[in-house]
Picture 1 (spheres, rainbow, N blue to C red):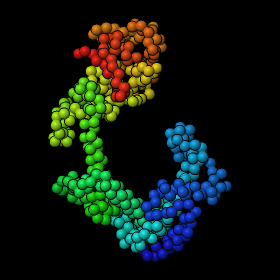
Picture 2: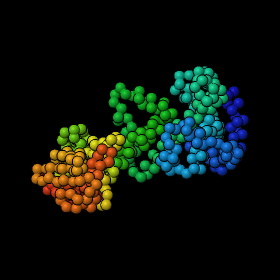
Picture 3: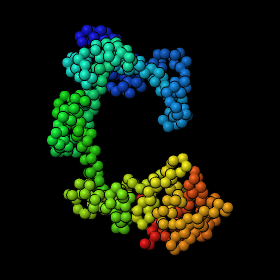
Length: 426
């Protein structure tokens, strides 16, 4: 191993001499993506003729099936950014090699001897090998280094450093959380989820992530497993008090049982829901209504394209309705009116529907009344519409208020909740 490192050392020292060209300091915690941005920018300046001759479109077509303009629009990049991104892909092996040399040198400068003593043995242990030479020989046809022992050593070292970067980042986040939420770390038990017989998973986790102490294991579990739920619980507890006070009338009229029905058939009753969510065991009964109300106010469920439509307090499950292209048929806002897919409305309101193709009319009948719409016309059986019904991709869209009021339903709009509420009177 010493021989491998002696061969690699001149390369890393040479690379360190070139670091000022990148215009940024390279530390052992510099990520490959951060390094890539600086490296590509430096190479564009250093190799202008090669960059000018580079065929970015050819490189893209070899890499992606998506239309180039669609890709650029999705990524929010212009022509020059696109060209630089494709060149980064073209320079991929070169960038990875340069990054490996730089990061290994920086790590060795900070932690002399750690790679040979801990890092390389760890990487070999994960692969079931006892030497870099055997690993390089076995994987000669599968990796860019093609059996080169120096390159194999560098890649193993880079993998270990990447794990140690994550450990350091996790430690930083743990310190931030501990400062923001005093006591949360001290009361956290990382072993509580490991039932008897699962102890091997702790050792497996420590080995896989290159943890070097139980403290690092605890910080990992604290940051990635405990704190997301902990923070969410604290935020939800605050909203349970804040939201009813902010919207007292809406909260008083809110029917948590009706809202809950969108959970069926996953849960057959609010009681089964509360039993499954053990946090309710230590909360008053009112907490369930508060949580359902928070879900509505925060638009966590029942919203499609930003809108919610309820019938007697229960959100219509628009995800069940698809158009000819397989896309979810959702409510739409046009001319300050909500239009709703016909089938969704019919099933939610218990309507019978008749289609007359010769006149392009849709006749919707409820228990109390019947309403007739003509596609692409603002005239309907109840008078004049602000927006005409129409069909698109096999879905017919009808004006919600006109449909509901003509059929005798109450129709209300909750601006703060972006919700149209239909009430049938049942």
